[in-house]
Image 1 (cartoon, rainbow, N blue to C red):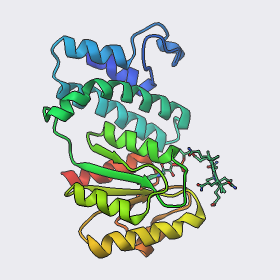
Image 2 (cartoon, rainbow, N blue to C red):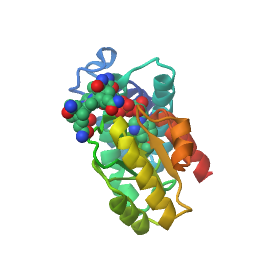
Image 3 (tube, rainbow, N blue to C red):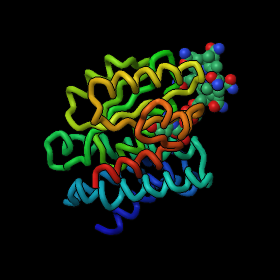
Image 4 (cartoon, protein in one colour):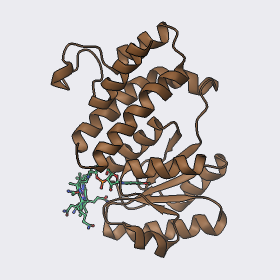
Length: 222
Ligand code: B1M
């Protein structure tokens, strides 16, 4: 059991999706996260163990290496893809309630902005950290955030913006959410925003990268 989870951890950490995938070269010809997750389930390993002993630690390693500039966006995307292949096999267990999530994270790129690469990375890392994700996509205005929050009691909200022009929209969305639902925790991120801006608009936390978002969320959940 240990061996298969170690292999799965390695596959996700280094972005090996399936046995046909040529990336990463050092794992060429070996099973990827897709096959390893299926084998783990067939061997009788509980989905919760797969998540907690392979996927979450793998994404923690990836997040840490990314924060420390030891890996870059392409490697992180491959890891996220490998994690996604594994999560596809685990989804039915989430749906049945056999795996409990730490909470729900609603994420979107703010109105006026269609950059979604960073937002998608954050969503995948947070999902890998054991959270249920509601991805509202791009061009998201306050009404859609508020509707999603009302439908998901206790959820945490994440806003992403990549344009200096859409930072203004981010501020307006935070104000509208806090006006109606002041207890909701809001994380902001994206290249043009920073901690000062976060405080200025009344958001709760600025995450410079996905790992910092995961760490903040896990503190909220503990
Ligand atoms: Co656009 N674009 N773009 N673009 N684009 C930038 C952002 C820009 C800096 C390029 C430049 O001029 N040098 C510039 C913005 C300038 C500014 O406002 N200061 C720019 C512009 C101007 C534009 C257009 C206006 C161009 C035009 O049409 N004239 C237009 C805007 C369209 C719109 O949104 N309405 C536009 C369009 C596009 C494309 C469609 C072509 C494409 C987007 C494709 C897509 O996302 N699906 C695109 C791209 C790819 C870029 C660059 C090249 C790359 C952005 C990216 O994905 N980075 C970018 C220049 C650059 O950065 N070199 C640029 C990688 C990504 C992983 O990083 O999103 O920062 P990032 O996410 C990071 C962190 O910020 C953080 O985690 C991620 C990982 O560390 N993070 C969060 C992000 N969200 C978070 C949320 C969190 C926590 C952390 O919690 C909720």
